Picture 1 (cartoon, one colour):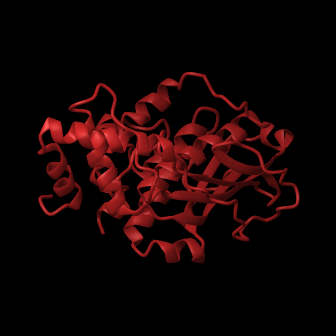
Picture 2 (cartoon, rainbow, N blue to C red):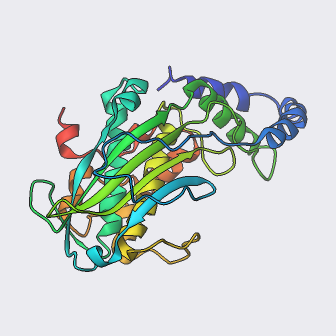
Amino acid sequence: MSNNPFFSLFLGIVGRSPIFLARSLSVAVPLTLGLAGCQSVPLKEAGTLTSYSKLGPPKGTFSKKRFHVDGQHLAAVKTVRIVPTTFSFNAASRIKSEADRALVSNALDRALCVALSDKYQMVPADQPADLTVRSVVADIVPTDKTLAGVSTAVTVGTGFVLPVSVPRLPFGLGGLAVEAEAIDAGGLQSAAMVWARGANSIQDNPRVSQVGDAYNMATKFANEFSRVLISGKEPKMLDISLPSRQRAQSWLGGKPKYAACDAFGRAPGLVGVIAAKYGAPPEWTDKKPKSLAAR
C-alpha cells in the first residue's frame, strides 16, 4: 500500500501545516464550489433488448432513463433468476481489466438480487423461473484515478482544519450506462430500462479506481430497476421507505435471504462505507463471489 499514489498525495497534504492548508483552502473552496458539476453520460442502446419500441420518453434529473413495464405480466411472477451482467464491446474496450469489469457487474447483480428478494423468490441463473432479468453495461466513463486521489486527499485533509470538508473536485468523474430487461418464460418482455448516470462532485465520493464511480452507479441502477419490477409501475421520484430487514442484513455483509444471491458475493457493509470515504478502491473491501475469488 505504501506505493499507492493516493497515500502519497494524502500524506503530502495532511502533512502540511494548518496555515498552509488554510491559505490553500481560501482558493480551493470557492473554486471547487463554483465548478461543482457532474459527468454527463448519454443514454445509449447496446442492441441487446428484445424490443425498444415500448420504451417511454427520457425522464429523470440525476439519472436519465427510458423504461417500459407491464404490471399485469409481473403480477403473476413468483420466481426470478438473474443472468450475470455483461459488457457491450464498446464498454469493455474502455475498461481493459476483467477484474474491474467484474466488480461493476457483480455490484449491479448483487444489489438487484437483494432488492428483488423483497417480493420474489430468487433462483440460480441455471434454473427455470417465471422471470429472467438480464443487464448489459452499454457504456462506461472511467474515473481518473490520479484526480480521484487528489480529490480525496484534499477533501480528507480539509477535514482537519474545517468543520465541513470541501466537495469533490469536479474533474475526472466517471459514469455508467446500462440497459436491462425482464422477460417471462415465453420470451415476452415484461419490463425494460435504458439508463445512464454520471457522478457529481457533491453526492459521490471519489475512489482511486478506474471503475470507482461506475461501481457506485451500478448499485443505483439496480435500485431503480428493482423498484420498477417490484411495483409494476413507474416508481415515485423519491423513495423514502425504510429498507426491509433482509436488505439491511445483506447490506451489512450478512447472509442474503436466498442462496442464489450469494453467486454475486456479499456487500462490503460498514467497512466498505468507511473505505469509500477515504477513497479506497472497491476491490479492497468488496467480497467477491467464491468462483471469482478462486481465480
